[in-house]
Length: 246
Image (cartoon, rainbow, N blue to C red; front, side, top):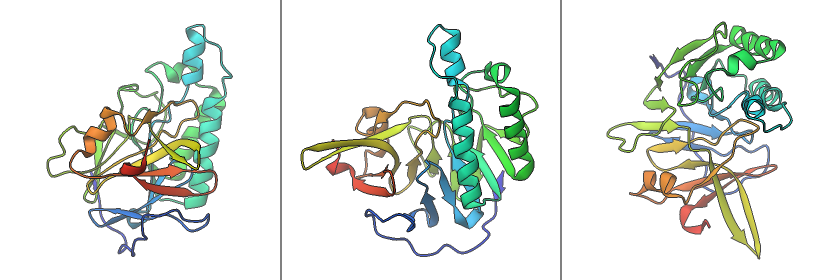
């Protein structure tokens, strides 16, 4: 499925730290992208919001294995999702896979949380991409389901391709985090990772861990170029060249 461009892109900003209320903007194949401090990615040309790796019901999955942690991850993640949707006001939402932590997550999903998801699907156009954790999604969820989808020239999928070919890709799965040391202090945060033809999304879910962008699983995807980690701070997003990262 392919969505048509709705409006012309506007000029991008430099790769630098920007203050709050002044959004970072970057481009893939001429398409403007706006990383959001929540971990979502807004594509203004298509009025579309992207999120990745919600991992809903991860807490209840751990509890079923005897590891009891506060079972509020789904509720917290849905609140964050509703907040960014209210802020960005997209026409559609695309979740790039692993929206649920496992195939039985729907059986453990609280009735009120399921109702929130159903209301979301009634409010805007929602597309759920399947991931390695959720090859089967809960019934009665609403929205559409796909393995991958095209948004103009962008290929949206869960697992990044080892070899891109001619694709311009946005993917999830790897939960990137970046670390940088300055003035004797080391800072680590969730990050968008972008090169000229690929962007890897941070995990949006409340209970998701992270993989350092310097790890081979991520760094090797950008082997032909220096990539940028867009680190999510408390009040702003900061772009750093991979050469500066720990």
